[in-house]
Structure formats: structure tokens, C-alpha cells
Image 1: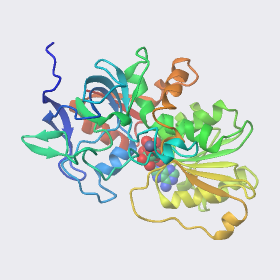
Image 2 (image 1 turned 60 degrees about the horizontal axis):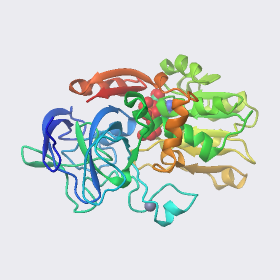
Image 3 (image 1 turned 90 degrees about the vertical axis):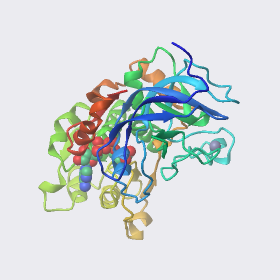
Length: 377
Ligand code: APR
Ligand code: ZN
């Protein structure tokens, strides 16, 4: 095949023209990568809940038309000037949050929020020239954290990580967001210990990755909380030991949790993206040492509230983007662990669809019917 290096590529992409509108498969022009950028042929992209949140434009960013998708895998098609780390043909994961290795955050062991390349859902353009690399019929189309619902995309090299070429791209795409985030929230952020008790609010992919991670380190009881009872059967397979549906009780859910584990759990994880659920998760924690970890991305601007005494009595609340993982330097370890069968990704893939049926994937996730639907580009 003739090289496309340096040329604009015409390919198929799922374009969102307005908030909540069905995506339209368009002929998208993708510009060549500029200085420090790479162009990636995306092969697989799974649908994550935050794509839905921003597609609905819950945070009212209003950047349309836009190409969503961020949890994906692909192959480097070409690299821009100044790129030394990647060559054409490298297998890669795009990263919705990047790592420059030089800034105060990247140099700290305490943070994974690179000052320059951290997640920025409100930015729809490339950093270098504040322009987009996508057009449809000459009209610019905005980026979104990777824009992987397109056969080709352009990213800064700081927002891409190289893969072991033997890693199956149709599975490891899940590691570029949800599953890695859930596992790392347990292992790195909370550091859940053997025998600890855990409550997980929200039993989607992120919540079940938390369950799988907690089970692996030998957590004791793992309580799963979800308002969709269809989630419970699968959750038990991921290591959840007890299920609670807040809609089936007249009491606050934290009281139900505290009945199951006297005084409350050691760790609670919020994997929904809802301020009220954050409050329930916090109140489900044991005093003295209980810790709540926010993993969900709340679309609405509603704050959560807590009486200071809840924290005064020794509870901690924290939050994490991508489970605190440094995306370039620490994600390859997760790929290796998956390859060594230390955890499974297959169990999270409930559906696979071609790009032409991407709107069905949105429906499946919204209807609570799937964990991850992998879109084949
Ligand atoms: N209480 C408990 N569970 C709830 C509630 C609630 N009030 N509201 C929704 N849920 C459940 C849903 O039924 C679903 O099972 O939360 C789960 C969320 O799962 P998914 O939609 O599959 O989302 P997931 O991809 O796991 O992401 C979870 O993490 O990365 C963020 O943006 C993402 O905020 C989202 C969260
Ligand atoms: Zn940095």
C-alpha cells in the first residue's frame, strides 16, 4: 500500500453534530501529525461511560461537531517531526491523560496529573497550534481526549504509550481507561489489604474492575451497590460477595452496608459519577480509618456535602483519575500483567460491533445492558 505519510487521510469516523444526537458516520479528513504528534490508525475502541457523559454534554462544554472515543488501541501510521519515541508500525494505546516526564506532577510520585498533557475534556484542539486535525466537508471537527471513534486520529506523543506487539489489540484497548483505572484505584490509591472490607457503588466496568482488583488482593467481604439488579449476577463472578439495591430498601444505603459490616467498610469506591452516591459511599466507611475513593466522573455541577464530623472522626475521602497510574511509565506493567494472566480483560467485553453500528453501543451502555462494547474500526 502506498504511504500516506505527510498527506491528509480520508477515512470513516463517527461524528457527533450536537449534544445527545445520534453519531453520523462521515468521511473525515485527518491531517498529518505536526511537530511532536503522531497519527494513529485506530483498530479497536471500546465505549466508556465518560464518552456518554460528554456526548450528552452534561458538563455543558458545547464543542460540536466532535469525535468522541478515548479507550482504544491502534498502530502508528506516521509521526511528525521531533518524534523519537515512535515509528510507523508501533502498536500503541492512546492515552486520554498524558505524561511529559518533566513537570512537577510527573516528577512527583504522588501525582499522575501531568501539568501540560493531563485530561482536558474541554479542549477540543491540539496544544501546539490550537487547531483541530479533523474536518468533514471542510468544516473543522473538535477532538475529545483521543477521538478514537475514527479510523485515524492525531495525538501528542505524550498522550500515547507503546505496546508489546504481541498484546492483543482487541483486548488491551480496555486498559487505556476503565479497567486499568479500577484495578489501580484498588492497588495503588487505596492499597487494599488482605481481609479488608470493601463497598463498591456502581457495578459497571470500573466498579467490576475494582471488584476484581479487591478479590485478587484477598479482600474479605466485597459489597456491590447498584440500582440496576441486572448487574448483580455478573458482579458475583467478579468477586462481589453481597449485593445491595438502594431502590429496594427504605433506609439509607449506608445503614444497610453498616448492618452487613459492623461500623462500616474499610474502603468504599464511588464508580458511578454522582454526588449523592459519593455521600453514601463516604457514610458507608468505618470511622477511625475508613477511606472513600471517587472514581466516577460526575457530569453535573452538583457538589456533594458532608458534615465535618464525618471526616473529623478519621475518615478520608480522595479521588483519582486513571487510578493514579502514570499513563506512560506505569501502564505497560498492567499490559504485562494481563499477558501473564494475572487478571482477565475478556470478562469485561460483553459486546462487539462494527463502527457503522456505534449508536447501538451507546444504547446498550445507557440501557445498562453491557460492560464494554468493543467497536471494530
Ligand atoms: N447508585 C448505585 N449505582 C448506580 C447509581 C446509583 N445512584 N446510578 C447508576 N448506577 C450504576 C449503573 O446502574 C451502572 O451499573 O452505576 C453503574 C455505572 O456503570 P457504567 O455506566 O458501565 O460506567 P463505567 O464505565 O463503569 O464508569 C463508571 O467511572 O470512569 C468513570 O465516567 C465514568 O462516571 C463513570 C464511572
Ligand atoms: Zn508532566
